[in-house]
Image (cartoon, rainbow, N blue to C red; front, side, top):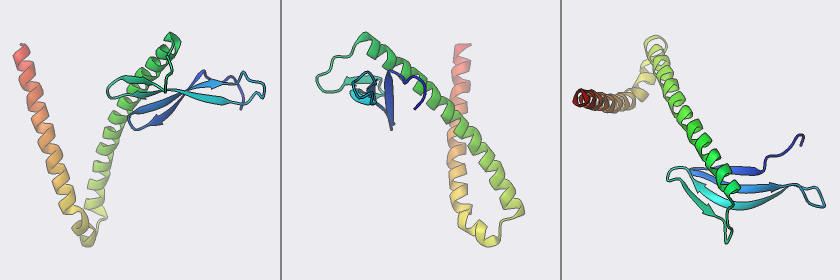
Length: 137
C-alpha cells in the first residue's frame, strides 16, 4: 500500500458501520485494525466496542463519517430515483417498439400495479405539500 493510511477504518454494514482504529506503528510495521465502536446511521447511536472508552477524537471522527455517509446515501437515493425515471422511459420505448405480445403478457400486470401504487403515493404526497403550503400562507 502506498501513502499514509487513515487513522480510522469504517466497515460499512446495512445501517452503519463497524469502526476500527488503524495502527501501523508497531515493530512488524504491519497494519493492525482494532475495533473501537459500532455505529448506527438511522438512529445516530455510537456504541463503544467492549469496555472501551471513546476519546473526543474518536467521537469527532465517527460523527464526521456519519454525517458524510448520510449525505452520500441521500445523494444515492435521489440518483436511484432519477435512474428509475430513465428506466420507465426506456421501458415505455421498449413496450412501444420492441416488445412482443408474450413479453408484454409477462410484465403488464406487474408494471400497471407498480405504476398505480407509485402514482397514488405521489398524488397524495403532492396534495399534502400543497395543503401544507396553503396553511403557511
